[in-house]
Length: 531
Image (tube, rainbow, N blue to C red):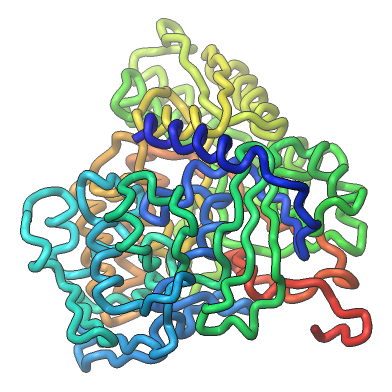
């Protein structure tokens, strides 16, 4: 797959590198790392998803204000009394950007494609709530007709779930469940994103992708809600340097900085006072992964010892400095009907006792180990701080291993690390979006840790119609994650930080998911500021 992506990169560069001078886009967004792909089935990173949400839509889409699911390609739906069968009715004016109608068969194809084992979709688990979806994804079932998604007629789709799933409509707005063009994929195979044009089901279509330069999208005139799309041309710039990002923004070359990691951390105290700096709470957690398959980190006593000497307050005060809150649990607060349990605190005395019990008194005999992190000043500073904490409190030697984004993701996926810098941003407003990733079947687990009790707790919780019983089961699962088994160390909860001038840009609303549908964003009309 990586060879295919590399080939795609070279071809896109060749195709897009000699275009004539482009006009300035209506909206220029500083988007972070270069996307790995624009295929909804393959993407896992935020930079990729922001672009993909522009190009491909699902049965539902996110409301710009509160990020809750609203009708997308489906204009309405019916839910059975037992809440396990959903019947979706597609819009009569839902068509591809190339003019062909979008049908329920396209939805079935898109979901089954994401579930095919050979696709290796990182977020295939988002579909596991559908009857037989997991069995099909792991190869236990070969017949796709047994998966609980059925095209009743060209405009009607029936979905059978294994159990009531209160967040299923949220999942239908997630990129993995977006509708992709079967006609292009079957014609061009893995090179379908090179089709000219790429058929789009979303509010925009792909105009060009210049590697390490920009991705440009343009309004899709055949989108069912094209009249509400505020910008005609939008550029996404792959910028990872905070200094470069701030310079582009301050000189007017860009309109929006989405991510706090694109802001120089040493300037945050001053920049937070600016009127174009907008801060808010959102569902994001910075944490450290253990590779639990590698000695000595296969020993829970070792993992707990390291977790107990991470001074999280020191990190948010000295390094991040953006209003972040320390995290002892993994799931951020703020989601409906869930109160996360407390995890481990800062207890160096207990940590030293645990390390000695594991056979390493005062760190004697403990091997040198590595901390994997992606390129970036803040991530490097956090690595240095952790390095000092482990040395000071436990006498351990940790080396730093810095890589660029794609190498970093690949190393995590292959469990080619000892400890790794990690983060997770919620995909929907339910604690399952955090806790499900550490089930044994999840491709986003990336720790090597698997626990049957944890899997059962998550599964039983999501079958529960009683919110109080569900909360109790999820709390038990999270306690296992952050206090008992400890395959991760929660460090802090992100503070959302966006930069844009409200006198120039409108349509950005702050919500817990930090999701801002680009279709709703545009330049402010000086004669009519509400537009």
